[in-house]
Length: 272
Image (tube, rainbow, N blue to C red; front, side, top):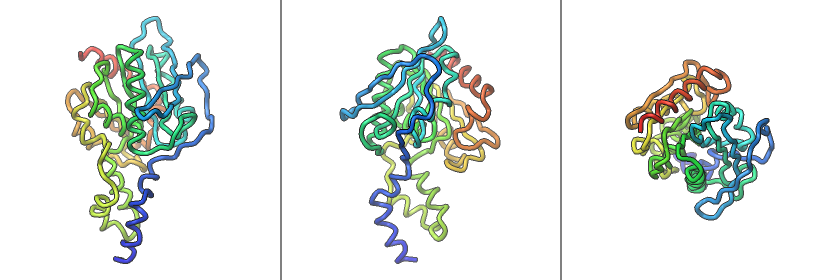
């Protein structure tokens, strides 16, 4: 066992763990049926990011929602998650992290964090009322960015199926490996740090926070959502989807939880 551990450790430290977080591709899955604008956003290090700006379909624009998608595919594969927002009165900004879709570069923890900052900054320049929906990796990054950076236009954050911290999700995944479960605590501390993790700073988000998580999530276990909710400052709310899986709330359950988010946005806008 000791020999296996010593063999495995360098492999984990050299980037195998980091690569588990990013599965980008350049496939075009779906284009909006409504009008949209291709936008280009410059990240902090100059990396050029691609996004879509989709205007609200309402006489009264309530604000802009930035969608921070999960770790796979690209924005064209995630659009269906949030296509109900423009009819609900919100502009919508979807963007791709570096290495995803048409965005330049290669994904990494620091880069994806900086890309999220860039997208939120861009949206804040075009809107006085800013709302954020982050799913899975996108939710973790949204918590991290908004917990460490003040954006005065921010009105609310919705976090769906996100992990509490990089170290805690790696610990869970190591615990699923036969023969390594007893090593998950020391090994997780050795192979990955908690830099750019969202849960430890979510209490500093300067707006109401809604945590959504499925109780049967096989990718990011439900306790991550519970931890994030417990760590968040007030006002906050949590929706536990009984029997829900990973990032399926808006597609599998549809209008019920879409309406719940829109109501949360309305309440959060009145909070200030």
